[in-house]
Image (tube, rainbow, N blue to C red; front, side):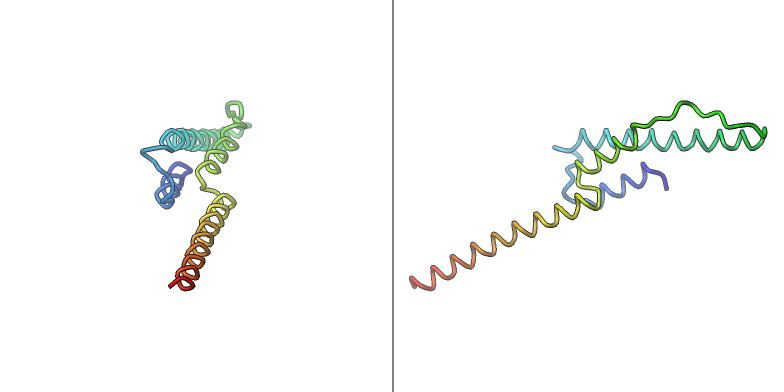
Length: 114
């Protein structure tokens, strides 16, 4: 499985990512970058095969050292890394705790007045 396919699966599994709304630009940029990363892998594989056949050192174009870090920043921005996913879950849990606490207080207040 390539990076692009894995990214599509991750986005589909993340209900909080708004692919057609607020997050659309980030998602599309991330998918374009995923395709670029996959294409780079194919170029390297081809160069390695050609080098093996000719018994020469592989000729690979200059290394791109920004695509992977940039891709990971997009993942973080969309909550698609383990750390950001944990933070989102903790945030949702904290919000739920606050709502539960408010409901308890309202219940006690109603019981005291009623």
